[in-house]
Image 1 (spheres, rainbow, N blue to C red):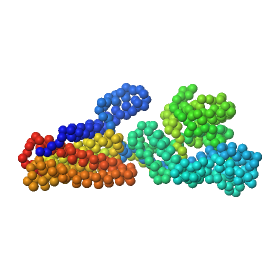
Image 2 (image 1 turned 90 degrees about the horizontal axis):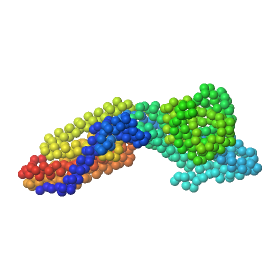
Image 3 (image 1 turned 120 degrees about the vertical axis):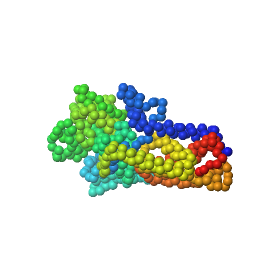
Image 4 (image 1 turned 180 degrees about the vertical axis):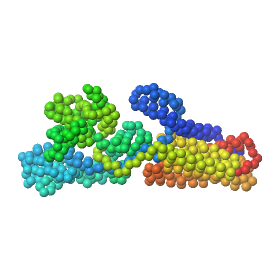
Length: 554
């Protein structure tokens, strides 16, 4: 007589129950999502409002609350493809190198003469020296600032390439350093974009590198591409620059080493500022929205140790002078230094409202993008289109499931009913696993589930056909069922392993939608083998033990 040990029955039933309970929250998606959002907000703020308490009460805390996250094509949201202007970083490197190189060269002014910066390409630092015959000595001094390139491909090379052209000392980044800089810039941009998106609580964004200098950004649940661009498109590059002069002519010659920046608050006013900032936003450790002494929205900030020292030294030596706070090339405030500012903290005032001060603090806290981004592609997927996709996927799944059930019952009778019940359990297990791992379901993912529904009964078909063959040899029904499961095992494993390998290849080599398809397909293969071999067999064993039929028809 066919048997299944009690311990194995308990494990099978326990796994089925766990899968169904874990998948159940997806039947009440809106309520559970509201419950989860309320908990996340309470943990973030440290206190609970009555509205949040009411939202939490929509789903019991003792039940699982994991959900299958809906992707961009199902939930709606924004899609951007951005190109990072890595050349901006080259200019910043040259600008930051100039004060240090000037100090090194000035130490031997008696030998090489006066030193001044000459005009040139943005990615080069050109320097004229008073004694051209001492160019070799100047190049030797400049090389003391070069350091080894930190990358696997740049071993044995330095970060600066130092030459002389037309009597000028020329410094630029070496090719190895450019490659390493490009990689660091993209990685830093990815991380900063991810932090900015996470700050506003979006669900399962897709942020990944594409090609050499492009970044793909897909954020479900956000209103529009313009809203997403406003969040991440600002470089939020904050600098504190000395003021050279203040005027109304934007076309005036700023002078070498200076630039002209418009004022945000003062119409028609332009400031001439020194190129080299005293401190930058990279030295900020915190930024938060607050109010100034007049009760107007502002942004408070705090520097790290090195930034606080430089900020304090400059304000102490320049009392009475104007000091510009520059955000993305525009002067948002140019206060007069009233006293030596110690402690490394301050406040940014301007024509802010509460929302603007909050958004600016988020951008500054997340860090400045190392380079400007150009948006090459943008589109918005509305929630209505996402709902249409969900409805279409649900309809396809129901039709596929219904046809498979009808076919199995028509071909195998009661055994087909067992296979159909196992098929429903299989779908529940797929959603249960996706909920546990926090997986994201996309439209191709739904296609993977529909394909799994069609494939899930393959193993049962192999078993049932084998049982039919064994019944023709005049074996008893118990023996026929037992041999049917044993002999079909090798074919079941072989068929599903090859499909599973295909799913792995799709996941490794594919991206985005292809990966979503591969994930649901791989999970579906595992659950379908489990339900076909163990769940269906358990139902057959229980039925056979109760009915003890003398003959069976498959």
